[in-house]
Image 1: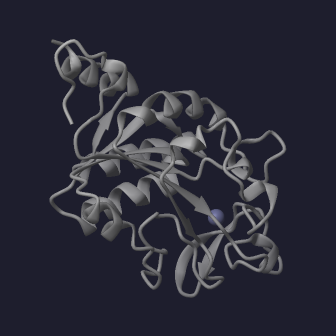
Image 2: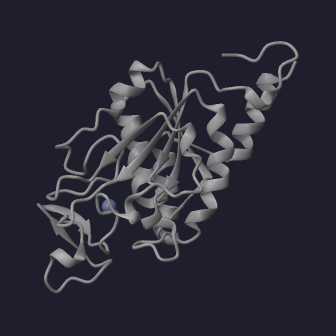
Image 3: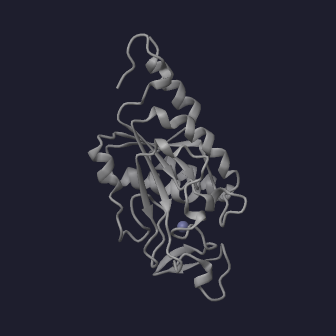
Length: 229
Ligand SMILES: [Zn+2]
């Protein structure tokens, strides 16, 4: 949809584009959250500003059963952030987080949820973790997000949210892998990593995979130019 003569860019949208808002949940953000990402709350104003400019707006939600295998508490002797294996795959053991139906699993109240059209829940299978919004890490449980995006005519995806080095990274890489014709962007100032070193590694990986790294100001400026007369 292009803005007509005399219209304000404030209502303009990026044609055929989806904003994918990854895991903006209390458990990853609140000071009292279970697995707070440093600076996590800072992504929310940027995401709220971007949301009205996308015709397709999807959120994901980490949604674990209490006995999820990614929790350090399920592995005797393991401490949170230790590395080990889960069903033969490398696994970081996390603090218990985003348990189904708990406050930690709810989307953060500052996120403008009225704009969200679909919520994809992931991480329900206790035997595998699920970083990507498209599938779990073992590839056993596709969420159907790729089909949803195709059915809505999406040709460009913009990924934001938490955390850059895990769920944002794997969602963007899966988008590239599963829908080769899709243009995939990560909005760098609208995400934060769990750790700076793995955040830098994620940016390198994403660049090598052909994901475009952009700033929210660039995205908004592009809409402004497109809407100008
Ligand atoms: Zn999780």
